[in-house]
Image (cartoon, rainbow, N blue to C red; front, side):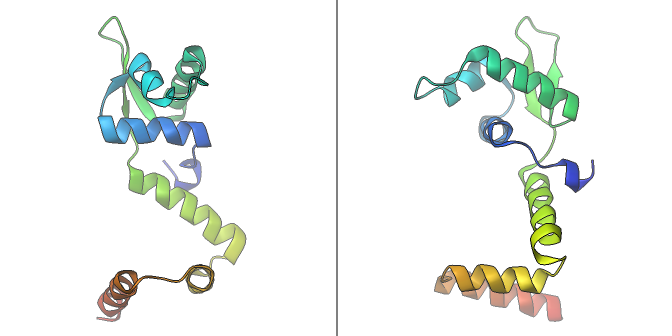
Length: 125
């Protein structure tokens, strides 16, 4: 699946987060975790998960009475899809412009700067 296609909606992303954290789950289990504030409708979650199955974000096991859904994309794949879109659309494909902009917007911690330095050192070698 091309990374461009791996940009789920906000609600689809919330469902994926449940599946990444909890593992394979029924619609009811996902709904119960997302419905902490009483604003989520079960049938909406069901329909979204069916659509996500069609999109290839999840796979459905229909062998049991309650269908069990499993994420078929990883968190890193989805992050890559979002990042690729932002990189191309907002920064003309320039990773350095994107990084410089991000670092100018929010001060990095010493730990984060150390991780960045380590990554840059690895990339240079």
